[in-house]
Length: 279
Image (cartoon, rainbow, N blue to C red):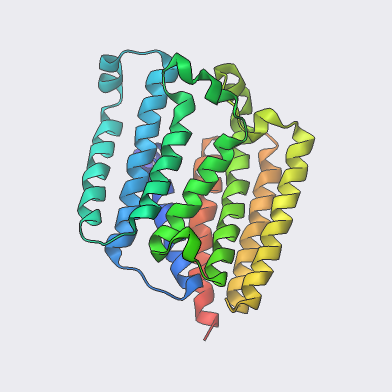
């Protein structure tokens, strides 16, 4: 059972369940429902992307041969291929807005560029905060406008606020991980907010994002999300801030890949539970 649990974490299965959960949460907050194939597409597509990123980064950052990669990462390759099949199967059951998918793919490719093994791309590694913003923005698009099937330029006020709210939430989580990886990123020549800004600026940035998160949450309340949803989202924001404070001390694998990532799943569960108080 323990091996299965770590397999789910290490192959990004848990975090991709979180992506589906956040997409479901988007539907609750926007007052819509989703087809199972849509949530399945989001799960498999993110699972495919994360395992592709891991395989590419292992090859480019560790200087191993392709044969060694295939021999040592068979489970990840199997998960990647399975996820790709699942993505294509769910895709052909849906009629997704192509523009949203194109934007998500472009953001993923841009996020990949710093780890690609090409010398002429080294300058991209110096684009600091873009790494953090790209990942947060990609997650926001995947869990808001893709499930809602709206484009960025056709979002209604509540959806626009939800988009900004999700982006701020994802930025908080990304900065927590960036702060953990800062030392390793510096050795590898990679950059993020945590390598560009000093710790004091990171603290100030976290406070600013948290304050903005609560403010947007209040504006969503004004647009009619309901007091129970407002309370649950505020609570998640507060817990995320506490997790950032806890992360200032050295923490282990489970803290980040189950605890911090799990905030996304917990947020969706809490919102789902809050639904019963909205009637």
